[in-house]
Amino acid sequence: MSTDPIPLAQALIRCRSVTPADDGALDLVQRALEPLGFACTRLAFGPDDYRVDNLFARRGTEGPHFCYAGHTDVVPPGNPAAWMDDPFAGVIRDGVLYGRGACDMKGGIAAFIAGLTDFLAAHPAHKGSISLLITGDEEARSVDGTAKVLEWMQAKGQIPDMALVGEPTSRAALGDTVKIGRRGSLNAWITVQGTQGHSAYPTKADNPIHRLVAALAPLLATPLDNGSAHFPPSTLQVTGFDVGNAATNVIPAVATAMLNIRFNDHHRSPQLIERLHATLKAAGARYEMRTECSGESFLTEPGPFVDGLARAIRRSTGVEPVLDTGGGTSDARFIARYCPVAEFGGVGATLHKTDENVPLAELHALADAYRTVLEEFLT
Image 1 (spheres, helix red, strand yellow):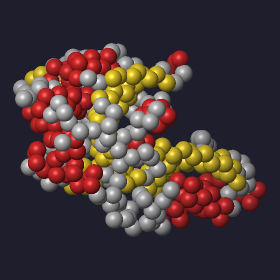
Image 2 (cartoon, rainbow, N blue to C red):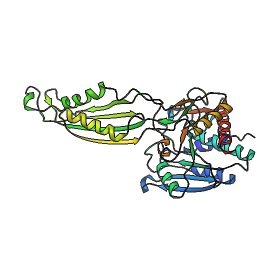
Image 3 (cartoon, rainbow, N blue to C red):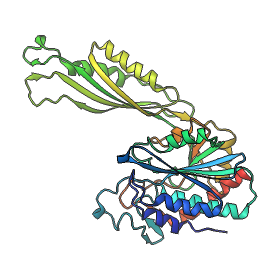
């Protein structure tokens, strides 16, 4: 038994599914799953000018319920002329598959379906049930995809007992890294009001730059924390600073800054927002602040699910996975609200890059790893 994931991976790459476009990608996934006995439900969310298509598919009704989550949308390819081939051609050259989504994560979805096919052939009477949550809104807004499908799943009694997100987590070799959590991400836009005036007469003005710098200084000088058992220290970065002033002899009326805080499990966003407010008030600033949290930090503690996943990876790849929480955000942040979740996929060396690619051998090995994961939990 060795179902080839390559044809499906090529077909998915050939769908120009830059968020929120689908271009037939989910149709391909549905056509691959229905012959395997999956009941497929399409779920569309969002306004007419940003309609997102999603797919929930399930085989079986009993527990334990194992869910694989992923996305068929991709980031734009950038300048197509910079690619060796059409970014959506799915070209194979020297044992490597090229195209937007090859690494992140159409190749991973194809590998899971190939591994799933082999698992079902070997274990037609497996215990429990299997589902797939595949969204078309992961690379952009992440509003009308996984989060809303999960709300629908909860209303329908379809929440899984465990979930595996197929993001390309491996660093150098397949299986070397499993993500069991992610840091949270908080953005802040701060506008400090001052009084415009001549730089030669500062007592007749109120310099908002000085107020803003005074507020930012302690935030940058004092670490948010020293890290935790599974996370590195939280970080605060000033990502933008602007006063809109081209004159050298004018104190401006307004100064603005953008901040991004990547925070571990010592924090929740409301407490960090209060810390920002307190620091700005202590600096005597007249200010307005807008914040946006794209995801709270989460952690799936090592236990039966994480341990079983690591065993399956070792058995399939011969590699001991490191349990990691680094990187940006993923849709696992939504799933973590409902059930234990981890992330495991191929090597992410070329995700979002020009000439994104994945070796064919890696996709075959990943399919085998996913088959082994299913055997770990459902046999």
